[in-house]
Length: 70
Image 1: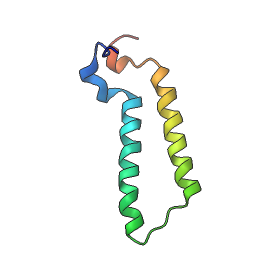
Image 2: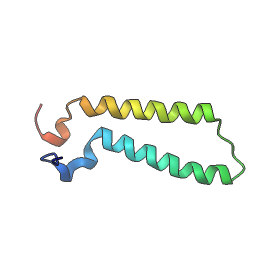
Image 3: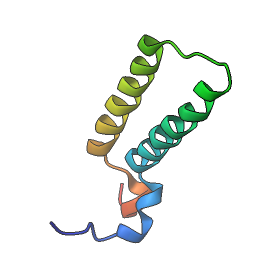
């Protein structure tokens, strides 16, 4: 496995941002359940699925903000 040439700019990749958002929401969900709030499993699974699909799609789309090319 090799790092991408612009690995220090990885935080600019939309797929990385979506993965971080997904991880943050899942971490926050632990606190939400503890605070009398109940999140429907269907809604939660749908949100996770949508974010996962968006991350996968954004991974294959060229992102000039990282590579500097159009």
